[in-house]
Length: 196
Image (cartoon, rainbow, N blue to C red; front, side, top):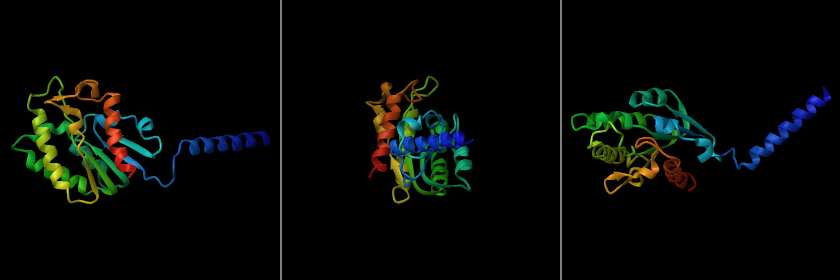
């Protein structure tokens, strides 16, 4: 029995050393990532090893999932990348009401701070040719709507993924979901803000 407790104490000490050596700090806010499959596929352990984090990404999700996930919960820092699955709502007849719903959902979140990524460009096989024009319009409307809110930092990632009227294929795995390089871009944009 004495040996067992000795091994447990030693194991606990080694675990403490491992945590200390990774640079994890108790004073870091927890980052909660919410969004669709782009978030769900993001390897947060790889890209944010020094931050406590939770991934609440759900493939195929849109505004309904965002509303349900944010309602009635408190967060330290919230990271949101959502909207690509609702791009049909970005058409002229629906965009104003959708932007209003999207922004009010995000602004109602109980979080110390919110990092809101723009919707990323896409070129999936089933996309219509105007999809990125609609996404640009949506992003512009959202960025203006949250510009004066000190609790929200808007991250315009779209411009890093879209060059000369086309998506940067090196940043995508299938013209919708991201490659490791694409996630590197997203992570560096966020880390630049977190490390200030």
